[in-house]
Length: 183
Image (cartoon, rainbow, N blue to C red; front, side, top):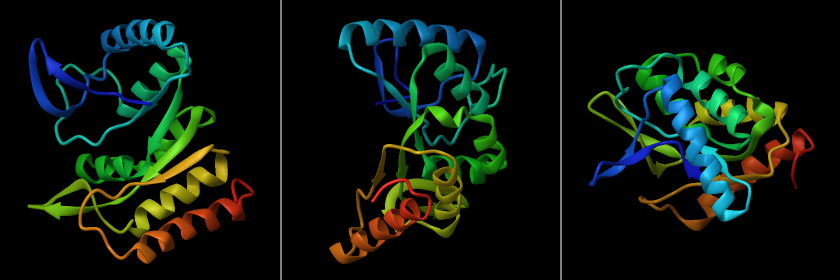
């Protein structure tokens, strides 16, 4: 999988995932780059949505429309990071359910989930806290509609006892069982 982002501007490494402009030109460039990468790696490629704090000027479409167009034109699967979706919806003031309805959900093959933290009124995707109820609700909506092939609980810091991580995974597994998705 690969994040739909850029990390370099010319020869300068910016050190973090940065959002792309949600424009037709960016869709075209991405599709060309994806085709080249797929020819070289000779394996399917799935694209992941990122959490972002700033939007790039020049956007001509919403993030959901952008993801949908890239996935459809490039013929790629999607790795839907549900926490990133929630984080962006909170920070940028959009409806996460409308976002989901704009995606080609049949292309979603994997889900990521985690918890973040608040910093100066901004929700940060830090993978440092338990998964919040809003993310579980969005995951439930996706799992009910799409037979994803995998889920990943992300935790990079502030690690709890292992049993707490297993409890989150058990909650996700139970969600999958409820919809006949995975064991």
